[in-house]
Length: 238
Image 1 (cartoon, helix red, strand yellow):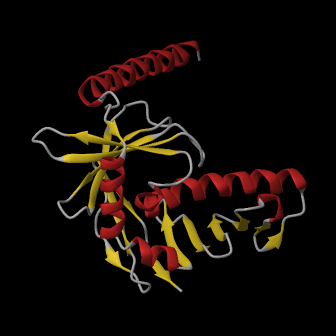
Image 2: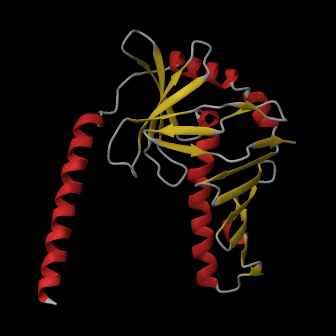
Image 3: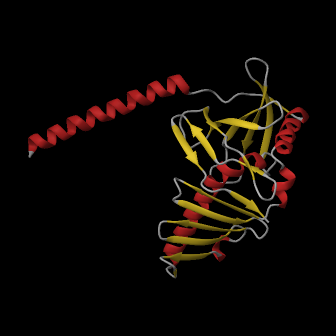
């Protein structure tokens, strides 16, 4: 038994060292400092150009958004007009009230959840899932949200990008995103400086955009390194 434990400890130690070395290499290669740009009317104009390209007026009039995340494990139907969203994962369904979360309805295996502690935990998890997963769908439309600031960044080659920083809102305030745009303002990708990822400046694509029934453009997939993030069957309608 002691011999087996020694072997396990040696293997665990080797794996720990390997993970540390691998992370160190990735950090050295990919980590970038948060850029500093110019705030003001030019940055706001570029943000407005992006919104126009993806039909922001149609987005504002869109009542319902449907999509999924995490390989389809998280499913959503969002009623933007009433501030409510149905969040489903595993054996849970939450009729989430975004304005008054404690008024949300929680179901486990289709049975109304009455346990106060369980109900509270499930609501918190639903909010965290929604904040993260909806951002991958509608982040471009949030560039003028309360608590945001915008800066114009000049990239190598002279092209302009839009840095959006969030001082409040969502689950992780303080995050920042550098949007890279086509000449017409259409978003192609962003680089992220977020609390949950220790390497700053990782880039994710925004692609496979489709025009929804309501006329708004929404993405259906992203690429983050070798990982493809799919949004499932995306719908936007009234």
